Amino acid sequence: MIAIACDHGGYELKLEILDYLRRNNIAFKDFGCDSTEAVDYPVYARKVTAAINENSCDKGILICGTGIGISIAANKVPGIRCALCTDCFCAEATRQHNDSNVLALGGRVIGPGLAVKIVDTFLNTEFSGAERHQKRIDLIEK
Ligand code: RB5
Image 1 (cartoon, rainbow, N blue to C red):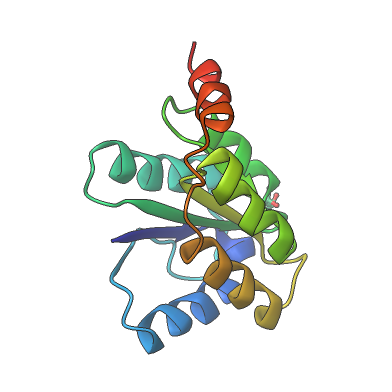
Image 2 (cartoon, rainbow, N blue to C red):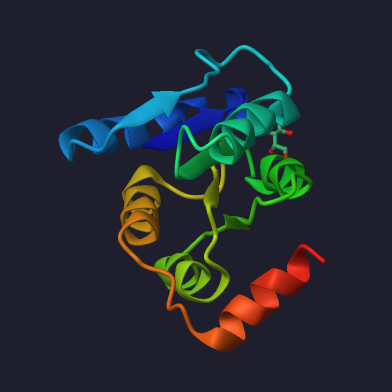
């Protein structure tokens, strides 16, 4: 189950991502927002990260204007490893190396075609499981 949320700056891009998830029969919970009316991105970061930490969702997607604010907010939450990606190389590497559980995107930074490819890469790449990567991930929480 994928948790997804955005602020007003990410709303239009979220619609494209929701379309991708529906077309691919990927189950998701949409935590808002529901329009381009201004809202506060930390509120939406908190909803998605809570769903992951409560185990009702396995991965999250967060979208704001740049992807920066919402990823900063998400990464304050213990257990969350949120990666802001603007290309597929980083989306693949952050799953393999960091076992990232949240992807952040900037709705004012990348177009929908690239964003969908990044989401697809993120959702379909497994953590390598390599000991060196696990050790580093463990060090983040210490
Ligand atoms: C909202 O205008 C904008 O600041 C927000 O979407 C995001 O880009 C913050 O990092």
